[in-house]
Length: 366
Image (tube, rainbow, N blue to C red; front, top):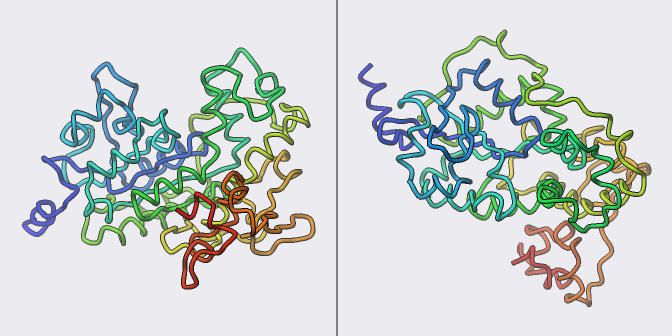
């Protein structure tokens, strides 16, 4: 008992008697974050938090909505800590809005980095569940709207956000590479969980996620003991809504336009997953075989696969050539959204040989 008390007192996540989370499930919204969080709480001994009752943005035991709420954030870490259990319980914040683009997330990633400080950040696990961005958008649409079909909303989409106040966000959330870049810049490391692998084996995914969190925070608080038989292999369906199959809910031309819209972003994510980034951990493992294109599981994206450089085991059906870039036109490259997916920070933006000429104008290299 004395050793336990000493461990609690020395735990940097024990703040004013409350256990700050050493694990964040940042998003992405509508990519099964609720299912994973439910399993953590009900099967793996992770303690639920408590909602705020302050009249501001909605919150609950899973989604604390502190760092993305401009009314709560100024109240500081003491106020945030009150939404968690007393010291000694392993806690998690699974607010997917933290993985939203600015200004919708109130600069949440910056707030987390600033309030937690360097030592806590280095010992915290930040994870994101990523799924097919068009399927994600459809799921999000039916989560918030019941009066109009996804097909009607997306009809005529040509890269111009003109379908109402939520439509800017409904598309932008799926450009995951932008927020991965931001998270790596502020946190230094990130865990990427391909949603299809989680769906295939939730037990293995969560086990490796918690092992990773324990390694990041050695000597820290651990989840309560649970038996293996409690750990389901198939995840539950949480916070899901009935809607048509995507292939029956989108016009062909609109699907082609959306595939083009997400092409560069998909390649950007694949470059993080397959490009040997030391700061990115893929859990439960780097996808292979049929799961290589884990962001392209919908018929829409399978019919228009992204042409990406980092795709192991590419086949004739799903080729993976590098995007065409003119090495002599760095100005053109700066304006080309494909530069982020082609110019790899490790090999082309520096490394041992200096920046590759074709990437000198790419903002991804700065």
